[in-house]
Amino acid sequence: MSARPDPRVRIGIADVAREAGVSITTVSHAFSGRGHVSERTRAHVHDVAARLGYSPNRIASALRSRRSNIVGFVSDDIATTPYAGRVVLGAQDAAAAHDQLLVLVNSNNDVTVESKQIAALVAQQVDAVVYARMFHRETTVPPALDGVPTVLVDTVDPTGMHASVVPDEQQIARLATEVLYEAGHRSIVHVTVDAQGPAVNGRIEGYRSAMAKYGLQPVVVEGGDPGIAATGRTAFQRLCSVSAELPTAIFCFNDQMAMGVYQAAQAVGLRIPADISVVGVDDFEPVSAELLPGLTTVGLPHYEMGRWAVEATLANLSEDSAAHVSGITRMPGVLVTRESVAPPRR
Image (cartoon, rainbow, N blue to C red):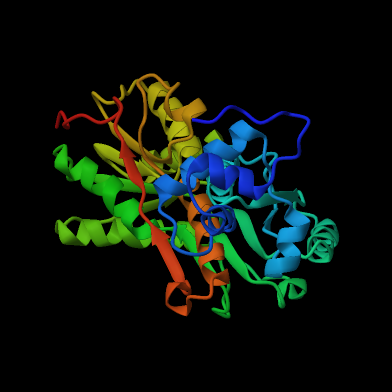
């Protein structure tokens, strides 16, 4: 291997090609994402470039390719949403793997702020935008993005104009219900929030579907607002007031509700999982991993959705129309097993 070039000398693409033992074209394709370059070769070229201190000139590259290699990431509420970081991390990892710069803006649910942020991204001639909401819902994409290739995360555009990725809410609910059924439970209640939306409705539908599959009677009990333990406590208290005999298992809309169910059940002398089994959704670890006993839950694909969005964005920018992505992609949840599920005592 040749010696490292003198640091006083400007390193060019030819130096990287020579050191890596590949052609200049291969180096160019390794950085631009164009052409047919294997992942192994791409990684080798990037390693050599990093060692030599070479960085491609983005401005010159943009002039040649008519692309800035910048992807905007527009979010509504990263600061207070507990799992938003996983979505961003997935998007950042995908962008880095393709040598794209991810520019993140966060509006804190202020429409005026978001409008100004989008205008700034468009002025910087970003190639595309990932438009993310921090909980699953329908949304209207701002008109300012009409001329910008846009992919949605955790939200769906009712017009169907933009590709989107969301959790598979029905699969998530079926999985949670099946875990309880397979543990031997036949009296399974779903406690949910007092709201409407794709997540709430989808999980109710998935729960009802699983219960019908097993020939069981579904029971849905509402609490209050999402995201707080009091909702779970309220739902459990309502369940106690309307049922002569408590269920042996409860599937909760999310982990915060499950925490409230823990509190309300333990307040009346019930033990988890000896007297009642509980399953949540999210795998919000400050709750699910810290409860005693640990909460069995269905983890949502936050990281995977963020990564998918950037990958889909770049696919839609490619010249290969067969690789373009459209419609709604639904990603499954994954079971995270802890200690809150056991066979029923009765």
